[in-house]
Length: 282
Image 1 (tube, rainbow, N blue to C red):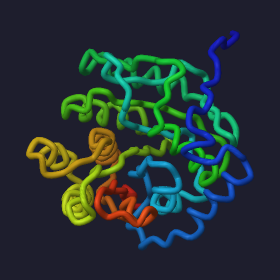
Image 2: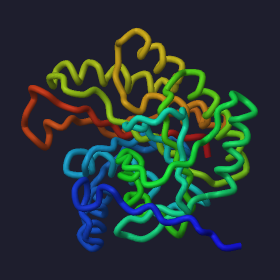
Image 3: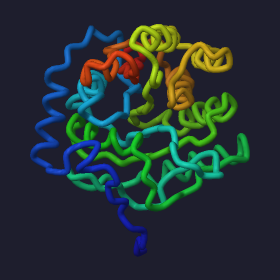
């Protein structure tokens, strides 16, 4: 059967990251190779990674992708916020592949169909396919995956407009059901607080990161409800924690934290970035 779907072209190559393949690969290898991480207590099943332009958060993201360097996965599920307006709660791609300067990544059609069907059964909300989106927070992770991982993989892109507790928990439960017998890496794309002073950002971000390390998806939403922490991808983080827990994971390890001040030198208004690995016992 002929697949008439098109390839999603990059909307941010040349601005958020280099569009020259050689330079891009070199930059990514540098971020990954120079990252120094603590020992991890098990096998990585999920990552939390920032999504700013590489000049701001590439070095932090490199710490997360370093933990899966050379590993092979059948599929990778990237969960991100959707920063543009769509009326549908959960979105995926209507294309057959994502294109970056490093090549095309095909979609995991079977897994996407399974996730959609199970979500409809559970909460009557499915994955709406959209074409030609310009969501940076999902795409920004793809070149890292192309450089870090060994071999080919298929992609499950999920963008969340609805970041409610109910939707995130249902999504996490469904991902665990679909991935139970698969080698699938989950990646939660999220920055932390935005446009506070360095001191204020560190205070807000530490609360979120401590809750992440406590392996508490419920706690992340409690922080949101109480106005005590900020993360634009809080629901993706929580969904990955819920899924990982059902898949046997029991630890989340903070690998690196920094703010945009490390790049700009401006501490009066910063964005927070954190990288973490979620693991299950070997």
